[in-house]
Image 1 (cartoon, each protein chain N blue to C red):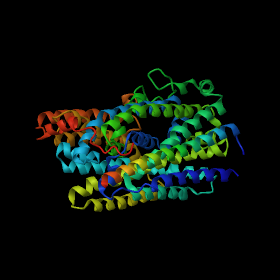
Image 2: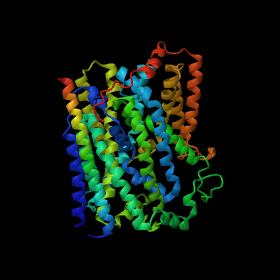
Image 3: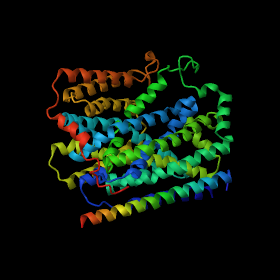
Image 4: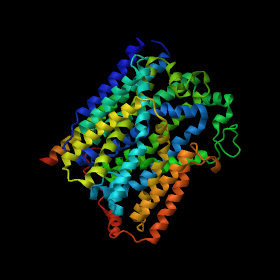
Length: 42
Length: 501
């Protein structure tokens, strides 16, 4: 791979962590919200 | 190999976005849900959506160019970001409470409630859309550039813009404001972690740290580390001592008058969540803005990366770090473009329907939602078609009309905190402000040389405030306004569903 390997490993990790955290937290919050909505509409 | 790396990274990014948005369909199909996400979002989502909407993709090009050409001046972004958040803190509580009680979704809608003028509501909706529209063109252009750069030229500019437009228009049509806020949440993480890591790591790898970076800038031209003032040098190009502070003041006052940003207030589940967001957002915003704007200034020390257009200097410099860096900076640009365009186009479709259609027709809630969807399609693809043309001068002139959005500030802020204001004061003040701004925009450069570099919009704003106060004092207050002030203070701040934290 061309360029600065060290920096690119750091960037790859940051990129992956961003996506994983966004999906994990986002899904959890939205799942709880859906449960609340379902509960309130029953 | 490089192309495979960059395309894989953008594909994973888009797949994650699509997964998060599309697995959370609308709980119900009414206009309240489509327009403000059912007023159900907590502080985490509100924080991320403010950050996502605030940081445009074009900043890595436009603001980067300002940093490279004018140095530390570009840090005005940080100061006006903080000022804007203070304005948000001041207006959010009363607006949210009135919004909850009276079903307000837009600034124009608030004006009708406060000033009892339906025509002012429609005028505000229409003019604010007109003023904000050029932004979508600049963002699509930034997205087209990023798609071209990430594919090493394999994806043509117009095709890149079209792909991005299809992605965000599809999720707006799917779930309106709910989809936009969920997408912004996803994009906010990329800013906070990917963006900060990108610029800190690049600062150390390229310059040996931010200290070394500033030393290089100082050695090249110490004036890059000063703001223009009465004795700050700047050769013969000094706009004047009031240029920099007026940029900050204009930005701070106008920040939350943009339709796409003020709409965020109404999506919160309670004032408690808005306050929680206002404690966290400034910290994130300052950290992120400082890291990136300082790097933009540092890029001035490497003039060899300016190439034919200094707007691309930062991307050119970061690209020397390798394909992963190319992918991350391009994803950051796309991240910014997507989060800003989705917020704008969805809000415009809602403002159009809420302020220009709903007051004059008896369409059902489902009907309004469908008209909003069609409006989003028309506005989004309309922007795309305009972006593909040789931009006429008129677009460049309209872009300068951003100073116009500030002219709604007196009617909002005085409307919230002063009972005397009425429709005559709001109408006359806003019109005077817009007309003076228009005159300055079409007769002066971006600043007024005769006023030491001050923005013409600020002069118009002073006249606007004056007219509002004078007209309010010589005419009668709006009947029943006292009740609104009671509601803005005492409406239950936790009436919201508090569903999505």
